[in-house]
Each structure stands twice: as C-alpha cells, then as structure tokens.
Amino acid sequence: MSVHEEGLPPVVAHFLYPAFKSGQPSVAELVKMLMGEITGFCATKKQRRNAKAIDAADPYDARETEELGRWAKALFIKAKESGSRSGEGGELLLYVFIEHFLKAPLVLSKMRLKTSPEMPVHGADGVHAMWETEGNRLAMIFGESKLHQTFASGMSEAAESIGLLAKDADGRMENELQLTTGHIDLDGFPAAMQEHLLKFLHPYATEESNSRVDRYAILVGFDFHAYQKIAEKPVAEAEAEFVKLYQRNLKTSLTTAKSHLNAHSISLASVDLFLFPLPDVQAFRDAFDKALYG
Image 1 (tube, rainbow, N blue to C red):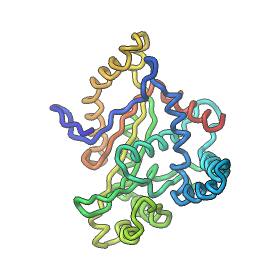
Image 2 (cartoon, one colour; image 1 turned 90 degrees about the horizontal axis):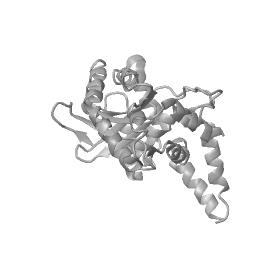
Image 3 (tube, rainbow, N blue to C red; image 1 turned 90 degrees about the vertical axis):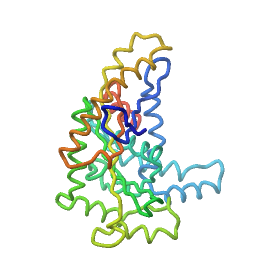
Image 4 (cartoon, rainbow, N blue to C red; image 1 turned 180 degrees about the vertical axis):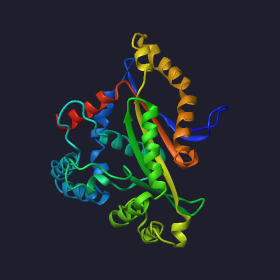
C-alpha cells in the first residue's frame, strides 16, 4: 500500500507479517509455502512447461516435474551447522512478494547461474520486469533482500547494495543488464514483443534504454519485539494487538529507510519496500534449511 499519512515520507511500502494461527505467527506454514515456490524461483518457464508436458503423457507420473524440483532445491546453499547466515530464504520470499504484489515476472534468476550450491549469488537477488503501458516502456525491478536482527541494520546494508548498483559502481548495473540479456526468460511476455523488449536492456545509448525505468524492491526481514509482548494475549486478541504495535513503528521504520536510501542517493519514489517482522530471524533461517534438507 502507498503511505501518505502526515509525518510519514511518501513511499510504496508493503507492511507484511506471517499469518496468525491460533494466536501465533505461522512461520512453519510460511516455510512450507516457500518450498512450493522453489522450482518457479530457479527454473525457467520453458523448463517447467516441458516437464509438465512430459508428465501429462501419464496422469499417474510426475517424474519430470519432481526431478526439476529436486534440481532446484540442490541449488540452495546447504547449511553446515545451526546458525546458518544464508539469506536465500529471504531471496525466495522476495521473489514471491514481487510476483504476487507487483505482478512483475522474474526474468533472471541468479540461482540457475550457480555452478555450485556453495556459490553465493552476487548482484541483485533477482531481476523482474513489467511493461508500463502509461509510459510505453519497460520497468526493470532489481531485488535486494536482507534478514537481520534489526530493521535498521538490514535497511542499511540493502541501501548500500542498491546504491552501488544504481551508480553502476565497478560496472555493476552494466553487468546485471548483460547477464539479463544473455539469460533472460521472457515467457511471460507476448512473443511479438520479446525482441523489442531486449532493446530496453542495451547498456549503451539507444532510444529504448534511455526510456527504461529502473526500480528496486527491498525486503527487510527482522526480529520484532511485538511478538514477545503478545505472547500471553488471548488467541482472539493476539493478531489485532500485534497489528497495533506494528503500526506504531511505521513512522520510525520509514524515516529510517529514507535516511539510509538518501545516504546512497536513492529516492524512496524508486523503491518498493517490503517490511517483514519475524519472531526470530535465525529460527526462520534454521526452519528453512531444515525444510530443504531435513
């Protein structure tokens, strides 16, 4: 939702949290849902379509689809011990949010460019695109996700990463555009438009690239004290009390976001911000790793 309340900086922000179940945040259910999104995050639409087509020949066999799912899971970094610092659960969560809330399909998954599960993803955590009919142009959305103990520290790191990309520091934006051009998945766009869309990604002077819009989607998952405060609340009151405490933090959170983005010359107007408070970020990481590998 857009926020334009008095005293708050204007921003397109999404204030999300795990759904409540029996008065408690359903983190386990969230992780289970994410497991079902892994193939879409890692595989191209063509790969998924081909797997489904092969399986369709035998209604009792889903071997190709299951194999594609196993391949996708194997791309994730395997936690060697409890206390994993991997942010790949956050990257997957951001992918889901961009697809669901922004309706912008993933056109470059860094996961399928990995040559080893232990290889971290560099640059944007995912590149999405959408066609803006009003301006008759392509909007690119570069994702950045951070899972931190505090919102401020996560926002600080996310702003720094986005700032380096926006400034094309060490050729980072040019590299992202070249990677996208070479590995782009445009199945979500009409075939007749795909060649035209590629012109918007050309890193050098073309009419299309000059009119391209670059946006940034930032997810910050963080430990939130409100969950402790509602622990003893009756089931029927817990979520409403949580939302009340969440709303009290909005001004501080958005002011913090604006400050960190301004420090790297990024306007809030070019950012879609996803706030995602968790009872325990590390517990979320551990649950994600366990669901992946058991």
